[in-house]
Image 1 (cartoon, one colour):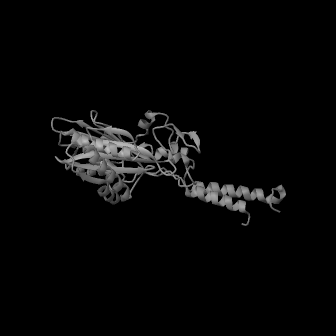
Image 2: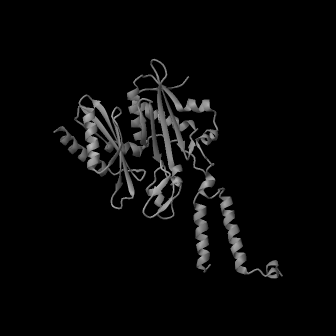
Image 3: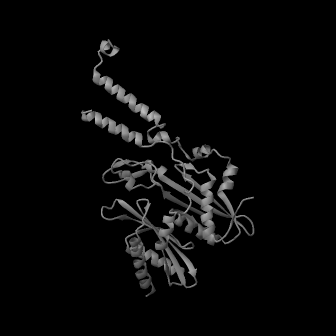
Length: 200
Length: 144
């Protein structure tokens, strides 16, 4: 006589438990914490971003910066705007005096495969609140991680050279891999018809 | 397996398992221009016989206003205009546009427009053709 029959557990309960166990096992084998929050480190303010950095700051800065043999700041900024447009970025901030250009690009990473997502339609990453007729809620945080952000700054290095530095964010983290930056500067070189050099 | 409730559980488990949950990593070509982007670029760009840059900027702003856009940014020295509007027919979709004006030669302006619909780029050439047709008209009226 088996334990089940001695304990008199109903067969449906056992089936339910085994199903739940099976489901957990599937998730475990998949190697993934499920909810959205689990995939992100808690970032309560911008200081947390700094601590997330894994690479040496010097190395990262070298990967993000290039020197151009020009002093034409206006032309360089125009070239950066054109490159960002080529890459499909939406330009958000342009400051000629500071030599600063920022843009964002939407790369759908978070699945929204459960019907209509109202928060998606009025998504604005600058806002904390969303207002739609159909749906009232706190901010559309879910899609914040779908944005690739890029900030490019231009500053004078010496009498004849400018330094261009680009920093990008992907999935709410700074990109530390040098390859995307190399690609970006290659595109910028083509837009400016100038050759970029690494910062010595 | 005839109980519909059990099928429901199986479907939910399947959806959860397929949802994917590892942190996505940036692809190496994230900041590299793709073939498709280069193709859109040609239909987003048009040249106009205008000498004065601020005249071209004013025409761009007027054209966007004609199309019902709300101008968000206009930067004269860099020749950049961004605008947004809610899109027909239900007005909860958002249509955004970025226009740049560049002096190509002393008497020609190169105007480039990037349009996005709910964060995704518009790749339909007709949309850009419409915009440039409105801009052409606007330039003509501004000249008068």
